[in-house]
Length: 235
Image (cartoon, rainbow, N blue to C red; front, side, top):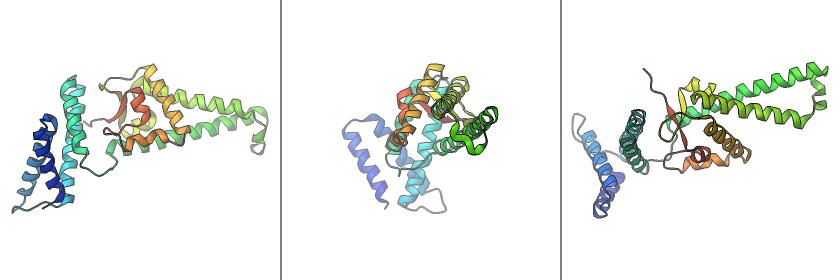
């Protein structure tokens, strides 16, 4: 018998004794899903730990999708209930990146490549206007130029996030930044998220570390701004 399934049963017993209704309900449904999986084939069988994790991963994903659907419909209580169950199931899964997290990293890479291209263009045209060659770039006023490029980046992330919750990279990966209640992001919230993210990046990305330990897998800037990144449903 899978050790993980034994743990689920033991934790269910403990939750029932503690009168923890949310954990009891969640673990009962998880064990029911495991039982259904065991008899889904031509003959009944015991699931391995890897197979149990696969089922729990599927159930956790269903909770995330249901929470997003409820939140979009304005049913915040049901959305919160689904998220709570998802957090409980996530506690039994190995640390791994969700589809949204992978998409967010790829989107960030796209955005920064785009911004680096803009940086290069700004420096090139500044040299041309100043009558300098590429080898003479050191003659440019470094601090004002860096300040301008930094402000340009802050404006890019803030403006795009405020308008539609999506930078160009996020548009490409079909993900969006929303508020905790799945609402739109206003200008102040977008700026706050952008500034905190920039500070986190300046400190070697330490602000991203909480995403690996946070039950909802949100980075520090999302916690501070009370936002999260969600995937867009395809038609």
